[in-house]
Image 1 (cartoon, chains in turn orange, cyan):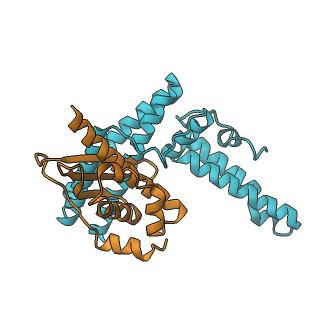
Image 2 (cartoon, helix red, strand yellow):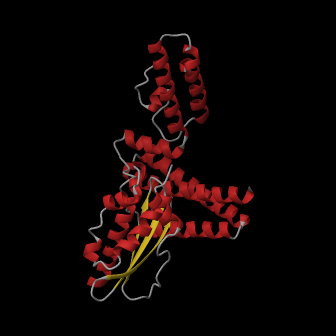
Image 3 (cartoon, one colour):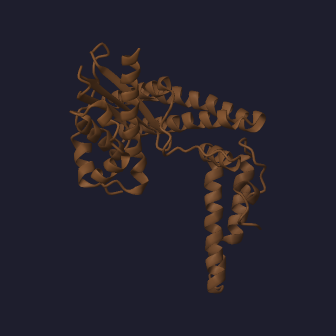
Length: 127
Length: 175
C-alpha cells in the first residue's frame, strides 16, 4: 500500500519518540492497543501547573500509519490544555495524514491514546 | 450444495473451535474439484461466473476455518458476538504494558542481531499462545462463555502479531 507523503515523513522522522521518567512531575500515560492489527501505542503527556500540556512522548509498535498518527498527535497536543487535547478527533488525524479507509483504526488508536493519557492525568490529580 | 450456508455447514463440519483438520482439508479438495472454474471452461457465461463465485466462496470459507484465530472470530460472529477489533482499543493496562515489553525485547534482539534470543522469544510466545488457544477451545466448545472467549481472542490477536514480528526479525537475520 502506498503511504501518503505526510505519513512517510512522520514514519521516517518520528517526532517525540521515547518516555518520561516515572517520577517526573505532571506526567500521565495512556496505553491503548488495536487487536485488529496487534498495534500497541503508549502516549505520555507532561502537564504544567496551569493544566497546559508542555511536552509529549510516544512509543508505538505498529505499522507506518500508527507510528505517524501517534507522532502527529504528540505535536498537536503540545501547548493545548488537557480539555482542548480531548477535542482532537480521529477524523482530523486521518485527514491530515490522508489515511486510507483500512488505516482509519490507526487514527482511532491515537485519539484513544490521548483520552487514556488525559484520564490517567485526571485520576492522578483529583485524588 | 448450499453455498450460502455458513462455513462449517459448507464443509459438513460441526460448529466447534476444535476442528478435524484432516477432514477439513479432504472436504475442501473434494468441493474444490467440483466447483473449479477449469471444469466450466466450455460452459456458458452464467455457469462460468457462478463456478468462479462458488470457488471464491469455498476458498474464503477454507481460509477462515483453517486459521484458529479467524475460526474463533467467525464462531463468535455466528454466536452474535462482534469483537469490534477496529475501534475498541481498551485493553487491560497490564496486558498492554507486557505487550510493549515483549515488542521492545524483539526490537532490541533484532538490533543486536541476537538470533538465540529471538528463538527463545519465539518459543516463549508460542507456548503462551498454545495454552491460550486451549483455554479458548474450552470457553467456546465446552463452557460456551462467549464474552470470556472474546476477551481471550482479543489477547491472542496481539500475540499472533508479536509472533509474526519475531519470525520476521528471525527471517531478516537469517537472510
